[in-house]
Image 1 (tube, one colour):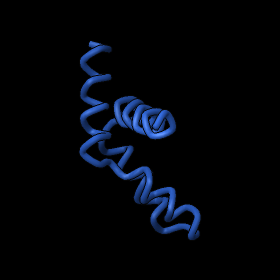
Image 2 (cartoon, helix red, strand yellow; image 1 turned 135 degrees about the vertical axis):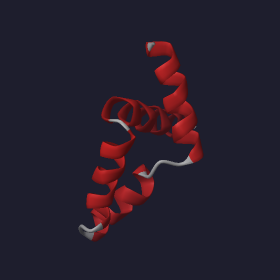
Image 3 (cartoon, helix red, strand yellow; image 1 turned 180 degrees about the horizontal axis):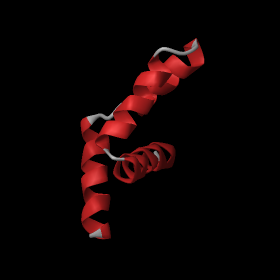
Image 4 (spheres, helix red, strand yellow; image 1 turned 120 degrees about the vertical axis):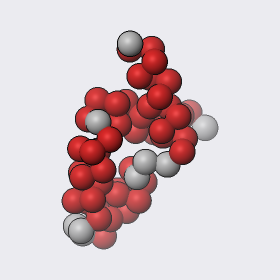
Length: 62
């Protein structure tokens, strides 16, 4: 459970730090890579939980 919380926290922080466009572009680059990179892209894609965490982080950093 802690691993999932950390993963979503990391994804949310990266989403806020990089911005939506850059984050999506980087995940897109991973999708055209090796099988391992494609798996990473699948894990790192912005899902509703990641977007919610990113919104919470953004509100704290305001």
